[in-house]
Amino acid sequence: MTHDAAWRPIIAALANDDARPVAGALLAGHDAGAALEALSAAKQARVMRTLVDAGLAEQRGDDLVARPEVFRQLLRSAPIERPTGIARFVRDGRIERWPSSASDRAELLAWAAERALALGEVADEATVTERLGAVFSDPAALRRYLVDAGLLERRRDGSEYARPA
Image 1 (cartoon, helix red, strand yellow):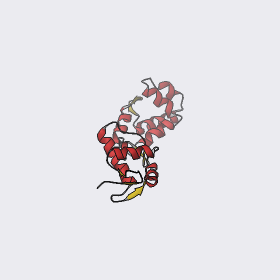
Image 2 (image 1 turned 30 degrees about the vertical axis):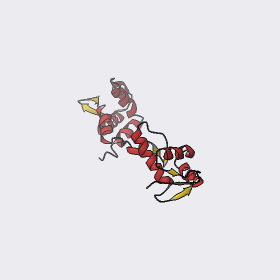
Image 3 (image 1 turned 60 degrees about the horizontal axis):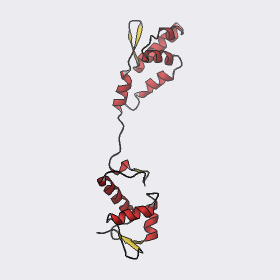
Image 4 (image 1 turned 45 degrees about the horizontal axis):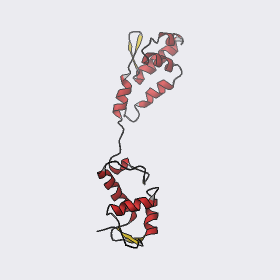
């Protein structure tokens, strides 16, 4: 079974109204005998098979023994992919939060500058502000950060902006 579907039998077993109390008792470190005795012989056999097939328990003679390691194995088989670079700060094309490190801030500002203006392009303040508004909630502040970082150049009168070569 691929790791993508490895969780299915476990969830199916835990969703089963007959198997869930038995699995709960086993995983809590208790004897599951009382939960099993509440079931008919046919249901007992089905529940035991369901839990063993899901990897939640193993059968030792007439007893079921919990296999809580199945959860660790499942989690290891599908590690969470953590974002890297500016993806840690950008969601859906918008800056969500500011990085604390100077190098990350510089990378994020360079990304924003690319969205504000193409190299060689000259634009008025309203255009730059509009473009920056698409990536940050305070485009005027972002525009100032970009000018302060030297990633955008501004005419003295503030009428035009360009990216330095």
